[in-house]
Image 1 (cartoon, rainbow, N blue to C red):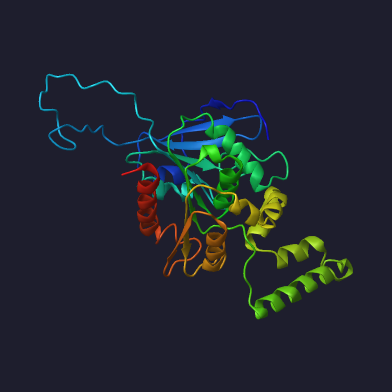
Image 2 (image 1 turned 135 degrees about the vertical axis):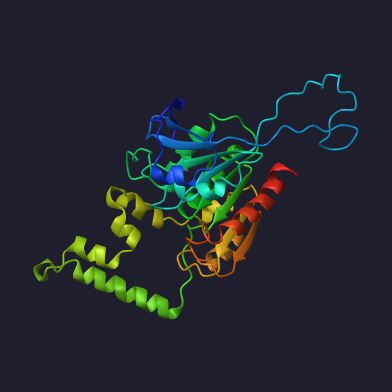
Amino acid sequence: MDSAPPTVTRPPTPQTAADAANSAAASATSSTVANGGPYLHVVHLPNAAPVRRKSANGPDTAPADAGTPAPQTAPRIVPQIIWAHGWMHTHANLLPLANTCTHGCDNYLLDMPGFGRSGMPPATWGTQDYADHAAAWLRTLPRGRRIWVGHSFGCRVGLQLAARHPDLLDGLFLMAAAGLPRRRTPTERFTRGCRIAAFKTLKHLNWLGFGAERVRRFFGSADYANAGPLRPVFVSVVNENLSDVAARVACPVHLLYGENDTETPPSMGQDFARLLPHAHLQVLPRFGHLDILTAGGHQAVYALDTFCEEIFGG
């Protein structure tokens, strides 16, 4: 998905109410990036870490001779955390977590194309298209150490990005990662088969007042029903099997799942852990697909901090 180098423009100053309510960083800025495709809206929470110097007197202390100029060193490129939200979400859903991770790194929160303030995909995109679009933007940033943090759909994009553009990422932190076929019990397989058979039959019974679209809305998921103009993209994305993609991911991966997640259950994390060459699986008790970001947010941030130490160094 080759394209011209992205250009950056500034959006209107006012933020959405959700942004204003969640953002604790006064220096947070926004930008929109265009690279020949849809606009990519990015919220930047800059590094807030103080400058610290080490000396012979011990770490984090002033030099013994305050009159001696400090040796000149090349400026350090600040580590980066890139945040990618789930389906039907925006960057605002991850902002409370990112606001606790601004100390010592640059945080960039994306509105994926079709969501929030970003433009619509120009065609029926798959996750590889989202990954290529994000890659074009990432190449405009200084290449510091970098982690991609995703939730659900954002994990699919992150896996594609790590497999297709391995030079752009140093680690993946994936919460409730989707992208593999679900394990199903015999009862679940039977129920699913009955629903599929009923759908195929009823969608042709227009004379009874059903019709294909009405039947799809009845049998489809809430995400399908609410997808609107993104419905073709949704169908494309949920039908992807990322098994081969996961096997090509070379960077370290931390997989975080909620014990009670029924959309992306921990068994999917177990399958990912077997496919990914360098993966660690962690399951948080009592949390589900969405509240892993809210009620379980403090545990997610603690796990992310530990992963950052591994990737960025202590």
